[in-house]
Image (tube, helix red, strand yellow):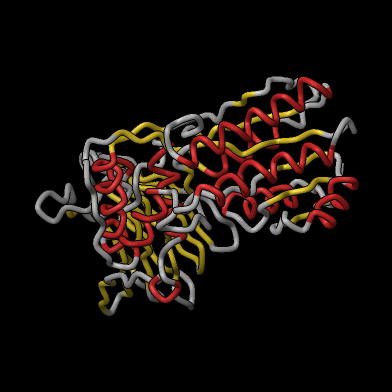
Length: 365
């Protein structure tokens, strides 16, 4: 299949092209200057499927909206004519409102619908709103992009109405929906994006503002929440490239070091423990806290004994054989570096460390 993308340098265009390439589509043509009708005709003649993404979002001139959003759409369907090709039109939930932009998008939809009815060709219209994700330009038509860019660069944001509702659409979901129309059974003119996230402007701002503090404290947001997961990914993509490093606090002594790396809220924390050769750490137990140890470099022994009993269980661990050792509650335990080099252990605990309530009780294994 040969594919043409108009507006290929746009936010959605760049993401679409990247994913088509990921999915092994190799015949992709792209055009951004659709006023070059000679080139446009050449590309349309060579294409089986046209993604018409070229859109003007902002202008003070009604002619600009009509030319970009309406006239070029009409030129495209006229160039296709009755040739068997499929067309996808990027439209907006603002289509049909009283704005110049909304009226131009409605007119473009009508052009595509009429062409489809006359020729019998496949056509698809997507009405999008508040698209967000990597590469989305701020200060244009995406409040998420604007908030992320300003907050990531320590700039103030302005909110006129905190309770104003928003419907958000994530770029990966949009692209998946676009590509899904290649399915020959998909014949509906108007297509839906799923999921759509609903949130108030003020709440959106608070969530994005919380991400920077989370980074400073090595906290990871709740990734089980689909909207939070996608907003966090988007926010990170706006960080200045010289601010991607977050210093951590490591605790050093003659035995080695211990560094808390990630906190997962209700999902516990991950730490890195480095032990010098011959050093034993631990010799304590917990009521409720449980841990998982993974030695990734060096070699050692993990010993466990159930409190009140005498039997000791030993596990030989080695960075050349990655495995997880569970440390259950009620077991006193230690870990000894038996090698000649530093032993590095990744440790997960089911709760963040709280020095006021450590749930840690000294007892030799």
